Length: 139
Image (cartoon, rainbow, N blue to C red; front, side, top):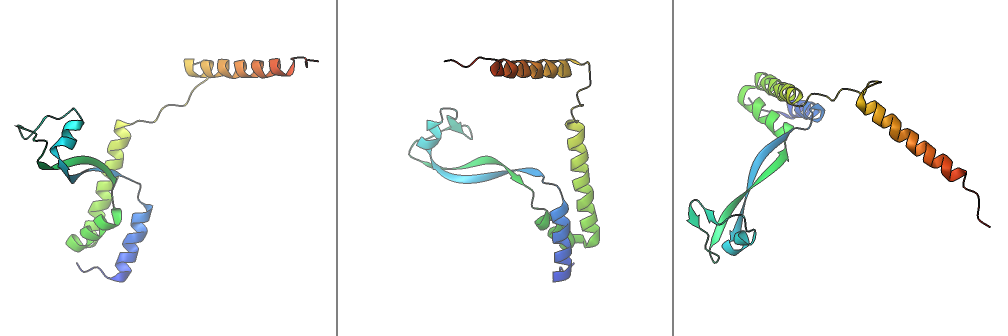
């Protein structure tokens, strides 16, 4: 479907409200074999020894933020409003999967080891500060 200015502005508003998501990507760089060998972790590429004088196209893994606007525009051009809806469902599924893999840490409750340790540390600091105040001034 064609994307006019009005719909593009609408997609921009949606994209700004979506959470930051990360995606994995690769970036290729032209490098000398000697540079790769300096890392001392890679000695061959594609099963062949690295020639220090030869140039290689090496892929670096990257983590990048998802460009929601660009993806929403592609979804609109492919399927119109239905494509945007499918993208929103995809984002929602990613968030649900993240929440399942990274459950929130429960708040410290009175009586558990964490709160007792925190209380102990707090008391130690308060006692140390009171000791500082009670030190007589030297003449």
